[in-house]
Length: 381
Ligand code: GAF
Image (cartoon, rainbow, N blue to C red; front, side, top):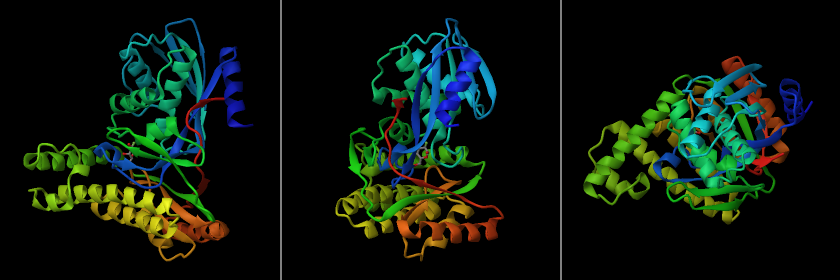
């Protein structure tokens, strides 16, 4: 049975009525990693893997939720609830809390949700859930929340209820995605442009390490603090500076910084430039140059920002000399999840075979492969 039917079926048998059904997708990011919370540039896209939410009013003061994936129910009182980090319900309650704080009257609801976004693969399943829940509540209760506000509520839910101080990229891509386009987003002004992704004979292949190392969330917040330390040092010289994108490599060299902080800042400054260069390369149809930028991004993430891991480095190093692959890099927060690869369409199967064998020989487990293409953001089904 298809996921949507399964959710509808479960909703009807659990709650005995017809629901509204909405979805919000996961995302890829072509380039621009860890730049979002630094007020920088990113180039993400929504994908055809999504979180689906079925919802209806229940005339009570409770949120009653059933998770199809966890086969588990969770009920909470809408007038009294608190974060439950580590539990799936926290993402949903986080969004409800944000809407309530913004003055929206969330009434009692029944909900079933499920998705086909692999969890822990760096494809933003949690952001997709937050966005789908925000969109579902807004549509059900006719709140008419503008899409960009939904993005903010979803991001804040992640900060306050999941404890991860994420940037805006994942939620923005999930809500605002457009078929066949990436989103060139300025994370400071939130100005954005849909950017056609015409890869010709090339496809985007994700290779999932199937690992997520446990330090991911804490290291994420640490990186954020390290970048902020760099900005504070720069502001002492030039108070006009707001983000690392206002800092040149020359200025960085003059700052008194711990070596680690300097390295993190250098990576961010260079990654912002790589996003700009990549967009120019893509506009000119220069996929080879784009691919080079993608590889450079990985080495920056691995050596300077230090958010890669053995498995991700292996996957990128393994394909480095493969002529059928123009570029590869780790994607998302890091410490596991997927690499994104620009692969010639005729070689996809061969690459899957050889990468699969090599990865299994080294790590004793097979990676997973997903061919992805840019799709529409949140919508009603
Ligand atoms: C995670 C975060 F949620 C994003 O905001 C972004 O910082 C990303 O890591 C790294 O680019 O997905």
